Image (cartoon, rainbow, N blue to C red; front, side):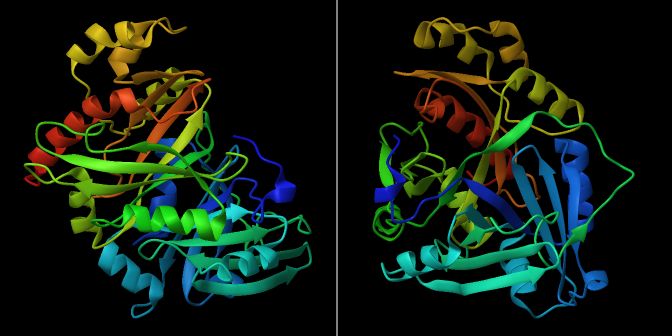
Length: 368
C-alpha cells in the first residue's frame, strides 16, 4: 500500500485534527475529557480576540479534536448546528505544503473552501488551505513545519486543573462518510481524481446486509495508507438502513464515524465503559462461532465477549473493533475503537452482526 511520495501529487502525513461544530463546546470538551481521556491543549475565544466562536482543543497521543461553538446566531457555525446537530465539520490533513495541496486539488476539480492563508504569531507560522468534500464537510490542509507553539496562531495554551487519565486512544485510523443514494461512486471518483486516492476495498449490498436493510461501501486510501476514508451509501432493503437514518437526522451527507486506534482494546474499552461510554450490544451467539471463522487469536475470548468486541481476520492478520452508540441525541455520529493485529481491512466478517446490533437500536428509536 506504500507509494513513493515523489510520484504522489498530494503527500499526506495523516490526520492533523478533527473539528466538530457543537452546541456547547465548553461542555463537550468536558465530556470528551471525562469519558475518553483527552487532555486540555489550547483555547481560542473572546479572551484571545475571537468574537465569533469559542474553540477548545483537546489531545490524546496523536489524536487531536477541536470543539467549536458559535457565540451568536446567524452565522455558518450556528446554521450548521441548527441543520445537522453536533457533527464533524473539518477533517484536517497534515501536509508539507498547504499552498501546493490547494493548487493540486483545485486544478483537478475540487471546490475551494479556503485559499492558502498564512497565520503568524511569535511561535512561527501555520499555512492553511481547504477544499469541500461530501455534504458540508471540508478537508483542510495544515502545514505546520515552521511552527513550535502549542497549537496554531490564534490559540493560547489551555491549562486545566481537571485532567482525567488517558484511555489509550492513539490516532485516527479512518473516518467514514455517509453519502446519499447513488452518490458513492461520485465521491470515489472525487477522491481518485482530485486527491489521488485509490479504492482499496469494496463492499456491496450482498456483503453488508441483513433481512431488513443494506448499504454499499468503498474504502479510499491515500498512497502511504495514513489517510483512509470509507464511503457508504444506502442500498435497497425492506426497511430503512442505518445510513438512511443518519441522512434523515443529519439532514444530509456527513461523517458517520471516526475510528480511533488503540494498542489494547480490552483495557481501553473497559475504562471507557466505566466512564459511561455506551457501546452496541452484540449477542452471545456471535461468540459461539467467531473463532471457527477467524482462527487463533492472542486474546482470551471471554473478556472480548463481556465487552462486546468484534473480531475479524484478513490475509495479513486480524483486528478487534467495537462501535459506540451515537454520541449525541440525534442518531448520527459515533466512534469506533479498533486494534489492528496485522489486518489492514475493515471487519467485513462483522458487518452482519454489527448491522443487526444497529438495527436493534434503530428499532428502539422507531426508525427502522
